[in-house]
Image 1 (cartoon, rainbow, N blue to C red):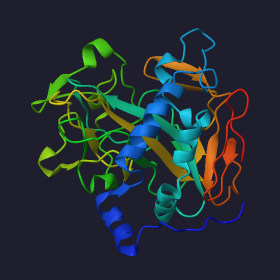
Image 2: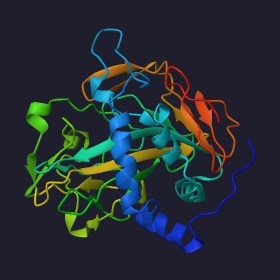
Image 3: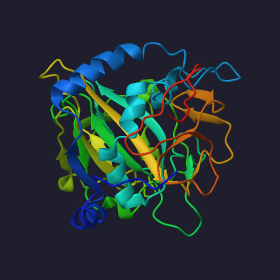
Length: 321
């Protein structure tokens, strides 16, 4: 594939600021009425899971808890979204020209829901104890770039994001430890006066120093209008506010995660295990959204060029357009 034409790169100043703080944005991708229309249609389409990547695990544990993962591999709008030049060009400004999208997931927050707990991720081994991404030995910095797009408004009252700038330089969590999945115990725990949870886990179980606490006095709120997105390192300390319920509208965020093509994705794994579920990776593949894959580490489900979208084929496994 030819190198991507860069129409929306970060400026040199934006790249420098990104490396200083760990995030960039917000940027506008869709107008509010456009994303409202697209999301309403896509939400209906997603109820059809016949083409979804994740199926029942061999031991019958099921993939229900992974059902919101990687729907860009069977949904046309989401496939288009992860390849948008507004996103890809900015991501490539940080990661370099050869970029894979390795995961996408939804983050709904309903009126009254607790906030998401402070966390960092470098290898995404936090739930299974097994690295899900692995950078080449001796390279830096680890982690992936998250592009979090607001499919609805995402104000602080509705559960908007929070960052602690500059924290991507130091990992405060040991992802080789295991967290216990216990949704009854770990939902809506009051921490520093705020109701927080982490999808059935207690992220504090991974702390390198059990007595350490995030310095929330340095936290900033990232409020997004529907159709805007922000880019941040997964290593950055990030969280979200509780949804106060002052509005009855749910907050919906959609995350797409990107790494250089040199990174190994799910190295040596045949299943993904998280949130009380396990599912086969037989139908999974990364998407090459920019440049070339000269490494051959990973299964590539689809390759794209700027302005082109990969499309579904029968069975939900995508192919290049």
